[in-house]
Image (tube, rainbow, N blue to C red; front, side, top):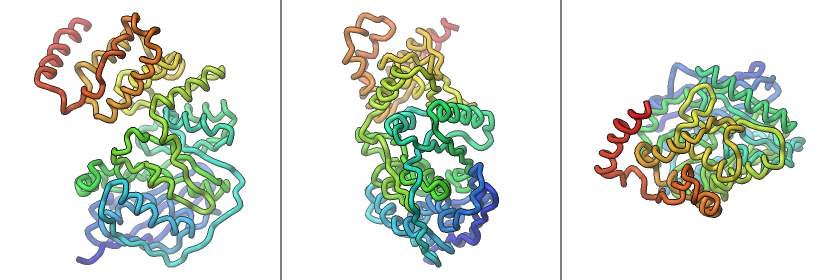
Length: 416
Protein backbone atom coordinates (compact mmCIF):
# COMPACT_ATOMS: atom_id res chain seq x y z
CA UNK A 1 0.00 0.00 0.00
CA UNK A 2 1.40 3.39 -1.02
CA UNK A 3 2.33 5.67 1.87
CA UNK A 4 0.26 8.84 2.35
CA UNK A 5 2.15 12.13 2.05
CA UNK A 6 1.67 15.43 3.89
CA UNK A 7 3.61 18.15 2.08
CA UNK A 8 3.96 21.59 3.64
CA UNK A 9 3.73 23.70 0.49
CA UNK A 10 3.93 27.11 2.14
CA UNK A 11 4.56 28.72 5.51
CA UNK A 12 3.13 32.23 5.28
CA UNK A 13 4.37 34.67 7.94
CA UNK A 14 2.66 38.05 7.96
CA UNK A 15 2.74 40.46 10.89
CA UNK A 16 1.88 38.48 14.01
CA UNK A 17 0.42 35.51 12.15
CA UNK A 18 1.76 32.31 10.62
CA UNK A 19 -0.45 30.15 8.40
CA UNK A 20 0.39 26.73 6.95
CA UNK A 21 -0.70 25.43 3.55
CA UNK A 22 -0.68 21.66 3.13
CA UNK A 23 -0.94 19.29 0.19
CA UNK A 24 -2.27 16.02 1.60
CA UNK A 25 -2.29 12.88 -0.53
CA UNK A 26 -3.66 9.47 0.39
CA UNK A 27 -5.82 7.96 3.10
CA UNK A 28 -4.39 10.29 5.78
CA UNK A 29 -6.71 13.00 4.39
CA UNK A 30 -9.53 11.71 6.57
CA UNK A 31 -7.69 12.88 9.69
CA UNK A 32 -7.86 16.54 8.66
CA UNK A 33 -10.44 19.27 8.32
CA UNK A 34 -9.53 20.00 4.71
CA UNK A 35 -11.44 23.29 4.64
CA UNK A 36 -9.21 24.80 7.33
CA UNK A 37 -5.52 25.75 7.35
CA UNK A 38 -3.76 25.71 10.69
CA UNK A 39 -2.80 29.20 11.85
CA UNK A 40 -1.17 30.73 14.93
CA UNK A 41 -1.34 34.38 16.00
CA UNK A 42 1.26 35.77 18.40
CA UNK A 43 0.05 39.29 19.12
CA UNK A 44 3.36 40.79 18.03
CA UNK A 45 5.41 40.84 14.84
CA UNK A 46 7.15 37.54 14.04
CA UNK A 47 8.29 38.29 10.48
CA UNK A 48 11.97 37.91 11.50
CA UNK A 49 11.38 34.30 12.56
CA UNK A 50 12.87 31.89 9.97
CA UNK A 51 10.65 29.29 8.34
CA UNK A 52 12.54 26.42 9.96
CA UNK A 53 11.46 27.72 13.39
CA UNK A 54 8.00 29.00 12.41
CA UNK A 55 7.03 25.54 11.11
CA UNK A 56 7.53 23.83 14.49
CA UNK A 57 4.03 24.60 15.89
CA UNK A 58 2.59 22.78 12.87
CA UNK A 59 4.99 19.84 13.04
CA UNK A 60 4.40 19.05 16.71
CA UNK A 61 0.77 18.48 15.74
CA UNK A 62 1.45 16.67 12.46
CA UNK A 63 4.14 14.25 13.57
CA UNK A 64 1.96 11.99 15.78
CA UNK A 65 -0.56 11.70 12.93
CA UNK A 66 2.19 10.68 10.53
CA UNK A 67 3.63 8.17 13.00
CA UNK A 68 0.36 6.45 13.81
CA UNK A 69 -0.86 6.42 10.17
CA UNK A 70 2.54 5.52 8.64
CA UNK A 71 2.57 8.67 6.50
CA UNK A 72 5.41 10.90 5.28
CA UNK A 73 5.82 14.60 6.08
CA UNK A 74 7.84 16.70 3.61
CA UNK A 75 8.94 20.27 4.43
CA UNK A 76 11.18 22.84 2.82
CA UNK A 77 13.37 23.59 5.85
CA UNK A 78 13.62 22.72 9.53
CA UNK A 79 15.64 23.84 12.53
CA UNK A 80 18.53 21.46 13.19
CA UNK A 81 17.85 21.08 16.93
CA UNK A 82 14.24 20.13 16.31
CA UNK A 83 15.13 17.79 13.47
CA UNK A 84 17.57 15.91 15.68
CA UNK A 85 14.99 15.34 18.44
CA UNK A 86 12.18 13.97 16.23
CA UNK A 87 13.19 10.31 16.57
CA UNK A 88 13.64 10.74 20.32
CA UNK A 89 10.10 12.10 20.62
CA UNK A 90 8.79 9.20 18.53
CA UNK A 91 10.49 6.68 20.83
CA UNK A 92 8.86 8.50 23.75
CA UNK A 93 5.45 7.74 22.25
CA UNK A 94 6.41 4.10 21.74
CA UNK A 95 7.44 3.82 25.40
CA UNK A 96 4.45 5.80 26.68
CA UNK A 97 1.86 3.66 24.93
CA UNK A 98 3.80 0.37 25.15
CA UNK A 99 3.85 -0.07 21.38
CA UNK A 100 6.14 -2.34 19.41
CA UNK A 101 6.94 0.42 16.97
CA UNK A 102 5.71 3.54 15.21
CA UNK A 103 6.30 4.08 11.52
CA UNK A 104 6.02 7.23 9.43
CA UNK A 105 8.75 9.31 7.83
CA UNK A 106 9.95 12.92 7.97
CA UNK A 107 11.91 14.66 5.19
CA UNK A 108 13.29 18.20 4.91
CA UNK A 109 15.03 19.77 1.91
CA UNK A 110 17.13 21.97 4.21
CA UNK A 111 18.25 21.45 7.81
CA UNK A 112 19.53 24.74 9.24
CA UNK A 113 21.21 25.49 12.58
CA UNK A 114 19.20 28.24 14.28
CA UNK A 115 21.01 28.13 17.62
CA UNK A 116 21.41 31.42 19.51
CA UNK A 117 22.95 32.87 22.65
CA UNK A 118 20.11 32.87 25.14
CA UNK A 119 19.00 36.14 26.78
CA UNK A 120 15.83 35.08 28.68
CA UNK A 121 16.33 32.22 31.13
CA UNK A 122 12.88 30.67 30.93
CA UNK A 123 9.20 30.70 30.04
CA UNK A 124 6.38 28.56 31.36
CA UNK A 125 3.02 27.58 29.96
CA UNK A 126 0.44 29.20 32.21
CA UNK A 127 -3.31 28.55 32.19
CA UNK A 128 -3.95 29.89 35.69
CA UNK A 129 -4.67 26.40 37.07
CA UNK A 130 -3.13 24.41 39.91
CA UNK A 131 -0.41 22.78 37.77
CA UNK A 132 0.72 26.03 36.15
CA UNK A 133 0.61 28.08 39.38
CA UNK A 134 2.70 25.46 41.19
CA UNK A 135 5.25 25.51 38.36
CA UNK A 136 5.31 29.31 38.30
CA UNK A 137 5.85 29.57 42.05
CA UNK A 138 8.55 26.89 41.98
CA UNK A 139 10.42 28.77 39.21
CA UNK A 140 9.54 32.31 40.28
CA UNK A 141 13.16 33.22 40.97
CA UNK A 142 13.85 32.85 37.22
CA UNK A 143 11.23 35.49 36.33
CA UNK A 144 9.77 33.27 33.60
CA UNK A 145 7.62 34.61 30.79
CA UNK A 146 4.02 33.36 31.02
CA UNK A 147 2.70 31.62 27.90
CA UNK A 148 -1.07 31.23 27.55
CA UNK A 149 -2.70 29.55 24.56
CA UNK A 150 -6.22 30.33 23.32
CA UNK A 151 -7.58 27.26 21.56
CA UNK A 152 -6.78 24.58 24.14
CA UNK A 153 -9.60 24.37 26.70
CA UNK A 154 -11.12 27.75 25.73
CA UNK A 155 -12.53 27.30 22.21
CA UNK A 156 -11.96 30.00 19.60
CA UNK A 157 -15.67 30.86 19.52
CA UNK A 158 -15.75 31.49 23.28
CA UNK A 159 -14.55 35.10 23.12
CA UNK A 160 -16.03 35.93 26.52
CA UNK A 161 -14.15 33.01 28.06
CA UNK A 162 -10.87 34.05 26.45
CA UNK A 163 -11.24 37.67 27.60
CA UNK A 164 -11.79 36.39 31.12
CA UNK A 165 -8.78 34.07 30.99
CA UNK A 166 -6.61 36.78 29.44
CA UNK A 167 -7.61 39.18 32.20
CA UNK A 168 -6.71 36.61 34.85
CA UNK A 169 -3.31 35.59 33.45
CA UNK A 170 -2.28 39.18 32.67
CA UNK A 171 -3.30 40.19 36.20
CA UNK A 172 -1.08 37.40 37.56
CA UNK A 173 1.80 38.55 35.36
CA UNK A 174 1.46 42.18 36.42
CA UNK A 175 1.31 41.33 40.13
CA UNK A 176 4.50 39.30 39.82
CA UNK A 177 6.29 41.62 37.37
CA UNK A 178 6.33 39.03 34.58
CA UNK A 179 5.73 39.35 30.84
CA UNK A 180 2.73 37.59 29.32
CA UNK A 181 2.97 35.92 25.92
CA UNK A 182 -0.53 35.34 24.49
CA UNK A 183 -1.07 32.95 21.58
CA UNK A 184 -4.16 32.12 19.52
CA UNK A 185 -4.23 28.86 17.55
CA UNK A 186 -6.71 26.60 15.77
CA UNK A 187 -4.48 23.55 16.29
CA UNK A 188 -7.42 21.51 17.62
CA UNK A 189 -9.69 22.47 14.72
CA UNK A 190 -7.58 21.86 11.61
CA UNK A 191 -7.51 18.14 12.40
CA UNK A 192 -10.46 15.72 12.45
CA UNK A 193 -10.22 14.75 16.11
CA UNK A 194 -13.21 12.41 16.14
CA UNK A 195 -11.79 10.40 13.21
CA UNK A 196 -8.40 10.22 14.93
CA UNK A 197 -10.15 9.01 18.10
CA UNK A 198 -11.89 6.22 16.20
CA UNK A 199 -8.78 5.11 14.35
CA UNK A 200 -6.18 5.13 17.14
CA UNK A 201 -7.94 4.77 20.49
CA UNK A 202 -7.10 1.05 20.46
CA UNK A 203 -3.36 1.83 20.43
CA UNK A 204 -3.45 4.32 23.30
CA UNK A 205 -6.55 3.37 25.30
CA UNK A 206 -7.16 7.09 25.19
CA UNK A 207 -8.61 9.77 22.88
CA UNK A 208 -6.39 11.64 20.44
CA UNK A 209 -6.20 14.86 22.45
CA UNK A 210 -5.04 13.28 25.68
CA UNK A 211 -3.16 10.35 24.20
CA UNK A 212 -1.29 12.06 21.36
CA UNK A 213 -1.72 15.84 21.03
CA UNK A 214 -1.66 17.11 24.61
CA UNK A 215 1.95 17.95 25.42
CA UNK A 216 4.06 18.55 22.35
CA UNK A 217 1.04 19.88 20.42
CA UNK A 218 1.04 22.83 22.83
CA UNK A 219 4.79 23.04 23.37
CA UNK A 220 5.59 23.61 19.69
CA UNK A 221 3.69 26.92 19.77
CA UNK A 222 6.46 28.56 21.81
CA UNK A 223 9.08 28.12 19.05
CA UNK A 224 8.74 31.59 17.42
CA UNK A 225 8.72 33.33 20.82
CA UNK A 226 11.68 31.22 21.97
CA UNK A 227 13.60 32.45 18.90
CA UNK A 228 12.56 36.12 19.26
CA UNK A 229 13.26 36.37 22.99
CA UNK A 230 16.23 33.95 22.95
CA UNK A 231 14.69 31.73 25.65
CA UNK A 232 16.85 29.01 27.18
CA UNK A 233 14.23 26.77 28.78
CA UNK A 234 10.47 26.21 28.62
CA UNK A 235 8.49 24.56 31.41
CA UNK A 236 5.48 22.38 30.66
CA UNK A 237 3.49 21.99 33.92
CA UNK A 238 2.74 18.33 34.62
CA UNK A 239 -0.94 17.36 34.46
CA UNK A 240 -0.25 14.03 36.13
CA UNK A 241 2.37 12.67 38.49
CA UNK A 242 4.29 9.49 39.16
CA UNK A 243 1.13 8.18 40.91
CA UNK A 244 -0.55 8.07 37.49
CA UNK A 245 2.36 6.71 35.52
CA UNK A 246 0.15 4.10 33.82
CA UNK A 247 -2.30 6.65 32.39
CA UNK A 248 -1.77 7.04 28.64
CA UNK A 249 -1.40 10.81 28.56
CA UNK A 250 1.10 12.09 25.98
CA UNK A 251 2.16 15.00 28.20
CA UNK A 252 4.85 13.10 30.06
CA UNK A 253 8.57 13.55 30.79
CA UNK A 254 9.43 10.74 28.35
CA UNK A 255 8.04 12.87 25.52
CA UNK A 256 8.04 16.55 26.54
CA UNK A 257 11.64 16.52 27.79
CA UNK A 258 12.86 15.38 24.37
CA UNK A 259 11.67 18.54 22.56
CA UNK A 260 14.35 21.03 21.51
CA UNK A 261 14.18 24.08 19.22
CA UNK A 262 17.04 26.44 18.44
CA UNK A 263 18.89 26.74 21.76
CA UNK A 264 15.74 26.10 23.81
CA UNK A 265 14.98 22.89 25.71
CA UNK A 266 11.82 21.73 27.50
CA UNK A 267 11.28 20.54 31.07
CA UNK A 268 8.12 18.67 32.10
CA UNK A 269 7.82 20.31 35.53
CA UNK A 270 6.22 18.96 38.71
CA UNK A 271 5.81 15.29 37.77
CA UNK A 272 7.06 14.17 41.18
CA UNK A 273 4.27 16.09 42.95
CA UNK A 274 0.67 14.95 43.24
CA UNK A 275 -2.11 17.55 43.00
CA UNK A 276 -2.26 18.12 46.75
CA UNK A 277 1.52 18.65 46.84
CA UNK A 278 1.02 21.39 44.24
CA UNK A 279 -1.82 22.98 46.19
CA UNK A 280 0.48 23.04 49.22
CA UNK A 281 3.15 24.86 47.16
CA UNK A 282 0.52 27.43 46.15
CA UNK A 283 -0.91 27.68 49.68
CA UNK A 284 2.50 28.19 51.33
CA UNK A 285 3.24 30.97 48.85
CA UNK A 286 -0.11 32.71 49.31
CA UNK A 287 0.21 32.69 53.09
CA UNK A 288 3.37 34.76 52.78
CA UNK A 289 2.03 37.30 50.26
CA UNK A 290 -0.85 39.74 50.35
CA UNK A 291 -1.91 39.51 46.70
CA UNK A 292 -4.81 37.34 45.52
CA UNK A 293 -5.15 35.32 42.32
CA UNK A 294 -7.98 33.50 40.62
CA UNK A 295 -7.04 29.84 40.31
CA UNK A 296 -8.84 28.65 37.17
CA UNK A 297 -9.51 24.91 37.09
CA UNK A 298 -13.02 24.38 35.66
CA UNK A 299 -13.63 22.47 32.42
CA UNK A 300 -17.42 22.42 32.83
CA UNK A 301 -18.39 26.10 32.56
CA UNK A 302 -18.02 28.55 29.72
CA UNK A 303 -16.74 32.07 30.18
CA UNK A 304 -13.45 31.10 31.81
CA UNK A 305 -14.94 30.93 35.34
CA UNK A 306 -15.03 28.22 38.00
CA UNK A 307 -18.48 26.64 38.49
CA UNK A 308 -17.55 25.58 42.06
CA UNK A 309 -19.73 22.48 41.56
CA UNK A 310 -17.98 20.03 39.22
CA UNK A 311 -15.61 17.33 40.44
CA UNK A 312 -12.46 19.24 39.51
CA UNK A 313 -13.62 22.48 41.16
CA UNK A 314 -14.70 20.48 44.21
CA UNK A 315 -11.37 18.70 44.49
CA UNK A 316 -9.54 22.03 44.31
CA UNK A 317 -11.85 23.65 46.88
CA UNK A 318 -11.28 20.82 49.34
CA UNK A 319 -7.55 20.89 48.67
CA UNK A 320 -7.27 24.62 49.38
CA UNK A 321 -9.27 24.31 52.60
CA UNK A 322 -7.00 21.46 53.71
CA UNK A 323 -4.03 23.82 53.35
CA UNK A 324 -5.73 26.58 55.33
CA UNK A 325 -6.63 28.70 52.29
CA UNK A 326 -10.07 30.28 51.80
CA UNK A 327 -11.21 29.30 48.28
CA UNK A 328 -13.54 32.31 48.13
CA UNK A 329 -10.48 34.56 47.85
CA UNK A 330 -9.13 32.66 44.82
CA UNK A 331 -11.96 32.36 42.32
CA UNK A 332 -14.47 30.00 43.95
CA UNK A 333 -17.90 30.46 45.52
CA UNK A 334 -18.05 28.26 48.61
CA UNK A 335 -20.55 27.90 51.46
CA UNK A 336 -21.29 25.12 53.96
CA UNK A 337 -23.83 23.79 51.43
CA UNK A 338 -21.03 23.52 48.87
CA UNK A 339 -19.19 21.06 51.10
CA UNK A 340 -22.38 19.08 51.74
CA UNK A 341 -23.02 18.88 47.99
CA UNK A 342 -19.48 17.61 47.40
CA UNK A 343 -20.08 14.79 49.87
CA UNK A 344 -23.38 13.85 48.21
CA UNK A 345 -21.94 14.08 44.70
CA UNK A 346 -19.30 11.59 45.78
CA UNK A 347 -21.89 9.24 47.22
CA UNK A 348 -24.54 9.46 44.53
CA UNK A 349 -23.57 11.38 41.40
CA UNK A 350 -20.01 11.31 40.15
CA UNK A 351 -18.57 8.34 38.26
CA UNK A 352 -14.92 8.67 39.19
CA UNK A 353 -11.94 7.12 37.43
CA UNK A 354 -9.39 5.22 39.46
CA UNK A 355 -6.84 7.98 38.80
CA UNK A 356 -9.17 10.66 40.15
CA UNK A 357 -9.97 8.44 43.13
CA UNK A 358 -6.23 8.28 43.86
CA UNK A 359 -6.05 12.07 43.71
CA UNK A 360 -8.85 12.32 46.27
CA UNK A 361 -7.01 9.81 48.44
CA UNK A 362 -3.93 12.07 48.45
CA UNK A 363 -6.21 14.95 49.44
CA UNK A 364 -7.78 12.81 52.17
CA UNK A 365 -4.33 12.04 53.56
CA UNK A 366 -3.82 15.76 54.17
CA UNK A 367 -7.05 15.89 56.17
CA UNK A 368 -5.97 12.81 58.12
CA UNK A 369 -2.67 14.51 59.00
CA UNK A 370 -4.77 17.16 60.76
CA UNK A 371 -7.47 14.75 61.96
CA UNK A 372 -7.85 16.48 65.34
CA UNK A 373 -8.90 19.62 63.50
CA UNK A 374 -11.56 17.91 61.38
CA UNK A 375 -12.94 14.86 63.22
CA UNK A 376 -15.52 16.82 65.22
CA UNK A 377 -16.47 19.10 62.34
CA UNK A 378 -19.79 17.80 60.99
CA UNK A 379 -19.35 19.61 57.69
CA UNK A 380 -15.93 18.16 56.86
CA UNK A 381 -15.40 14.97 58.85
CA UNK A 382 -16.96 12.77 56.13
CA UNK A 383 -13.76 13.08 54.09
CA UNK A 384 -11.88 11.13 56.77
CA UNK A 385 -14.05 8.05 56.25
CA UNK A 386 -14.69 7.52 52.52
CA UNK A 387 -12.70 4.87 50.65
CA UNK A 388 -12.14 6.88 47.48
CA UNK A 389 -10.45 4.06 45.59
CA UNK A 390 -13.63 1.97 45.65
CA UNK A 391 -16.07 4.55 44.30
CA UNK A 392 -15.35 4.04 40.60
CA UNK A 393 -17.66 3.28 37.64
CA UNK A 394 -16.91 -0.43 37.67
CA UNK A 395 -17.80 -0.62 41.36
CA UNK A 396 -21.10 1.24 41.03
CA UNK A 397 -23.58 -1.53 41.90
CA UNK A 398 -27.31 -1.82 41.16
CA UNK A 399 -27.96 -0.87 44.80
CA UNK A 400 -25.96 2.32 44.25
CA UNK A 401 -28.00 3.17 41.16
CA UNK A 402 -31.21 2.78 43.15
CA UNK A 403 -29.82 5.01 45.91
CA UNK A 404 -28.84 7.56 43.26
CA UNK A 405 -32.41 7.70 41.90
CA UNK A 406 -33.84 8.10 45.41
CA UNK A 407 -31.33 10.87 46.10
CA UNK A 408 -32.36 12.89 43.05
CA UNK A 409 -36.10 12.38 43.62
CA UNK A 410 -36.23 12.84 47.38
CA UNK A 411 -33.20 14.76 48.69
CA UNK A 412 -32.73 17.14 45.76
CA UNK A 413 -36.48 17.50 45.35
CA UNK A 414 -36.95 18.44 48.98
CA UNK A 415 -34.21 21.09 48.76
CA UNK A 416 -35.85 22.64 45.72
